[in-house]
Image (cartoon, rainbow, N blue to C red; front, side):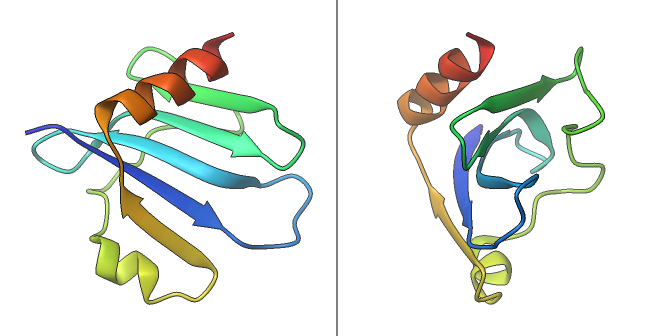
Length: 92
């Protein structure tokens, strides 16, 4: 079953994203991904497109508890519609 996750990353790095959206396959590997930056720009990746700044994870996506155990991160399950809205915005 496909699932969707949003991670907020609280940090002060100008060149790093602050929101990370992931579509996960049944094996918990990323299928599609969107990174949103503090200035509002967004980048995206899928099996056919990666850049120097974004790519799909090479290992299964960790559980929400593992992510949320780190104080700078807040991960939550989102709906397919929320992910698709971020995907459409990122792709322009």
